[in-house]
Image (cartoon, rainbow, N blue to C red; front, side, top):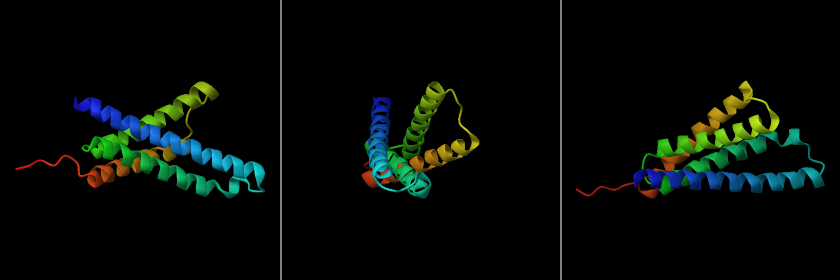
Length: 129
């Protein structure tokens, strides 16, 4: 039963990540379309929001799982990386570049941190003596 709960926690984290990603992408696509902003001028903002989104996804995953936050966060970040890799590989027939690999390692690290903090903020499994 424990693995089922951890699986649901990871699923909630991934759903959170993709909901935030879609919302942020929509807002920035409208800004780029209807203003004079250039993608190069907001690249750091988008990168920062990407890391924040992965942190929040790991946090939600850790909060739902209530234990093993580092495993939940790392698995959530790894699942996100796998989905993005599959979209890129199957859709564009290209592998990750070294630059992208470093970003995704950072994403996994930030999601892991979010999972750890999420477990600790939710109280985790409290065992009574």
